Image (cartoon, rainbow, N blue to C red; front, side, top):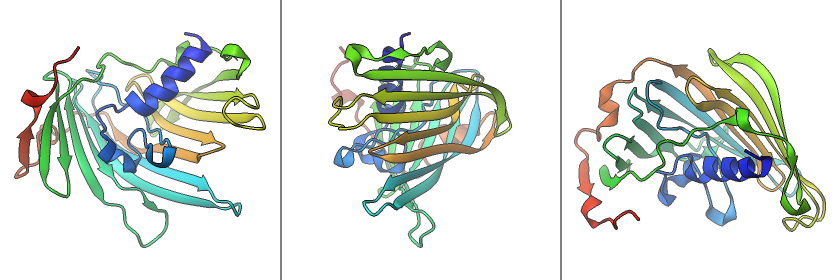
Length: 258
């Protein structure tokens, strides 16, 4: 895989497809792509990977630059689980101003089953679960070891990929990587060179990043950190709609897959 291919794949896939089951209404919480006002918030990619169960808490912080030189930081924490067949449970929580009286709150529960190809989108406000067909690419995996360094197409800049070695993070063995992308002036409306870095710690055993820090000139710093993780099988009840919540099955009305 070339540097250019990976940059497109990782930044687009990890942001937009990484948790592709995430609809527009769930994107205020740091779960996947966040495109309101043309902004993009990229979370960690959770693959539908069998035989690698876990339960974790993911901490998100987004620090955006202010015109006066300061920063505005929002944050949340949310649980994510995956069982041995690859089913994924995750909660969506609203980002709230860090260290303020404004509290974060749960907005959605998402339950994805790659075996039955079902996706539950459950509104915490309405206590209603919409049942949809899961159409994600269940074979998709992150492969940071395949990345290379080199120039970007058409002389637009360059990409550097660094393997910083093996270490332990959150009690698990990870490999530490750093990717730096430099865009030349005039590439994206920038009058000076624009540098974006992503520093991340990848767990081969779980197939995901246990930490990811993205620094961009336009959007500031986005930090995703696994603060607690266990590799035991989650309780099966998490992969069913919450008890007492209404289920609305939309699958019959969905267009056929091409």
